[in-house]
Length: 115
Image (cartoon, rainbow, N blue to C red):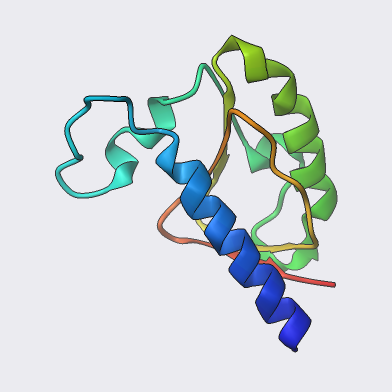
């Protein structure tokens, strides 16, 4: 319903802000997409699969996302962290992002909101 749409919209806006952090000052714009440099913009990286995530469209990944953000947030002062979401359909409830953190979705990754 309307709440789900609001949640997805808020998440999408936050992702745009977070993704913008990867461009280094003075760096040229990428030739085709952010994918050329986003995976290397943070000192620490992990995949949602490392935290038990399953991109089948029906398994809840809320705990995996929350655990991943909690773990990766400890690297905020050491260059930040990037959480990679590989291709798949990732069902999740709400989770909070943190400073110096990039949530990088593969072009074939879709976040599905649950309540």
